Length: 104
Image (cartoon, rainbow, N blue to C red; front, side, top):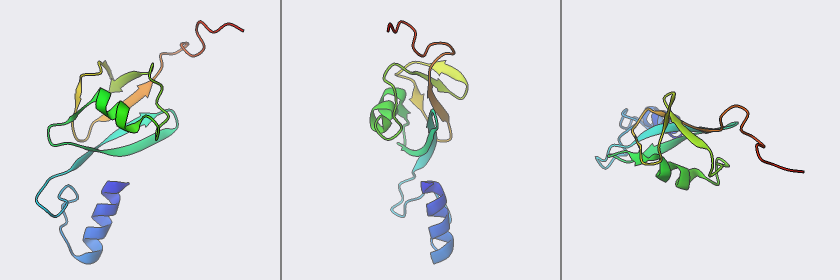
C-alpha cells in the first residue's frame, strides 16, 4: 500500500515518478510479508533485512506466531536469511501441525 501511495502522490503532484526514491536520494523498496489472512508491504533496507528482523518488526501487526516457519519465494529458509526488495515472505505452519501435542 505504501508503494501505491508513493506512486499516486508522485503522479498527483508531478513529483518524482520513481516510487523507490523518497526524495532525498535514498532508495527504498518493499517486500511482501504474509501471515494467515494478513499481508503487508514492508520497507526493506538497502542491504536487505533478515527474516528474524522482519518477524520482530511485524510480530504484533501481522499476529506472527514465534513458532511459525518462514517461507521465502516458495522455499523454507532460516531466520538469518536476508530478504531483498520484491521478495515474498510467508510465515506459516506445516499442514497438520496446528494443535499437535495439545491435550485437553
